[in-house]
Image (cartoon, rainbow, N blue to C red; front, side, top):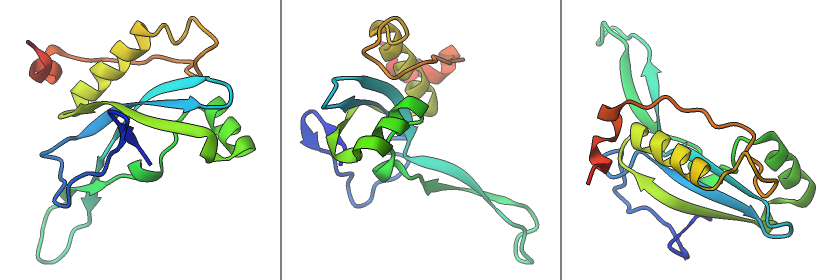
Length: 140
């Protein structure tokens, strides 16, 4: 279960990429207090093969594994494997309209929290390459 504003987050029945593309999340090991900040997309692009009716490849958006996702950190995954996932709280901290917004908000959260400078986080890497057009929806 993912929490958003301390409540279980369940997307609407007609949920699509027009609503949100992804989210920035915080996973907390409730036994140790150690955390992980990351991003996850609700959708990924899938290329369909060529058929007789279609001469070209068709790209479509498909729902990702976000409902069961527990981060990409190796050390976080090791702790989940050791303890089981019941001791891990998964929170959505930002719902994002675009892929670029996800990248920006993830990096912002990671830098604001100093995730690389403290042992309170599983994060071992911050990677980002973000252009201004990707975050124009965030401008005030």
